[in-house]
Image (cartoon, rainbow, N blue to C red; front, side, top):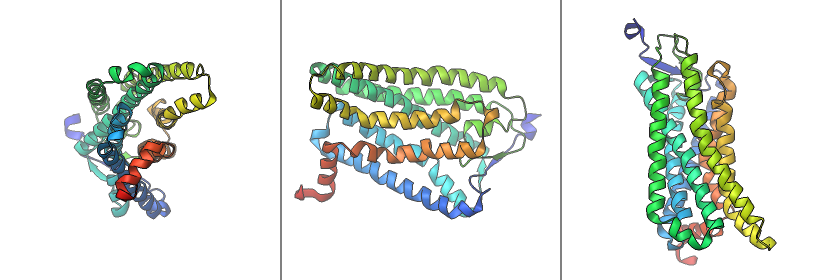
Length: 308
């Protein structure tokens, strides 16, 4: 029966329920998206050109910048076109593809942030062995593992969401296909799938978060033993940018995904999604360059050439 009644498309509401914000949303998304693209491209170019930045920390930062460009591109262009044309129509397969890509990139960033935390831990806890432990081969293996793990984990959530039958209604109260608003549209009881997804997600994502926290416990325990205040400040300053990104990423993401779909609030969900899917990846270039003198110098050298 479901094969005959399954919806062929969804309608993304976006911010159409508040039409007075239409132009503001378009300008905001375009501005943030452009800023994020330019910032992340600049970081990638600077790291590739400046030999002083050919270290594990900047190798991970380069991959994070590429990931963030893809991350924002999975949702913002479609949201801008939708707001501009007033049509939120998206086919069933497009919705599946968007949810899969978005979760692949989000989960990969989660695992990559864990790898970056371990990198900072080794740099501070074992500085003399840092180059040996964090070899180029090891760094590449960690990045590849993050991408593969993200793709596999996303496959599970995509299957868990779209294995449910959807036979109407088909209005998604969001500006992209996300699990909570899509799952609520199922024409059968979705609570078992929701519980399975929540349990698996909690185990995997919280495990990655726990490893990140353990890395920082080791970092803090090492830093407090440094005798000089300047030494402690210098050691911790190398982690402050990464720590800021972790707090923003997990703080806003957990607000949406660590609650049942039945308790999903369209307005709160959309606002929280703007933070973790738009603002955080677009502001990462600012976070990582604001207090990093080497990156500032590399960017000045990239854009101003011989003057620096």
